Image (tube, rainbow, N blue to C red):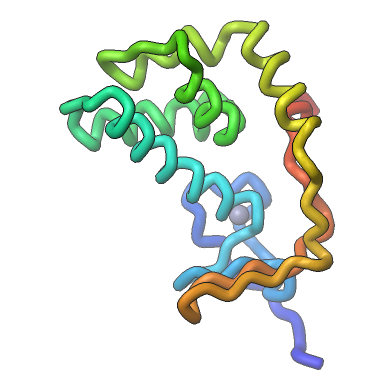
Length: 151
Ligand SMILES: [Zn+2]
């Protein structure tokens, strides 16, 4: 058995103390908590979806700033931000404009239902290895839900 050890989570805004056990980490160049890695992927998806959907010419620094504001500063679930960005009623000139949609209570409720309806992933059984880079290892502790934000 490989000896477990503590590593630094590479996600800049890690909310789990910045240390991750190797056995629970996701390796993609650096090591991440499963949740931190998911946020990293969601941020990328938000950026891509925003540019693609609205054909925006907004500079990347502004777009990244808005994403970080929503997720890292205001504490919105990254999956929720991505979901809101896909709502048919949303039309944006700037990603900062999504603020209103994110704060709308009814959207939070709809997203909660959406998350609850999805099949929960059993991390004990997952192992994805992609191009020798991405390894998703079992991570038992957390299945992220919108409600976790209000702990
Ligand atoms: Zn982390």
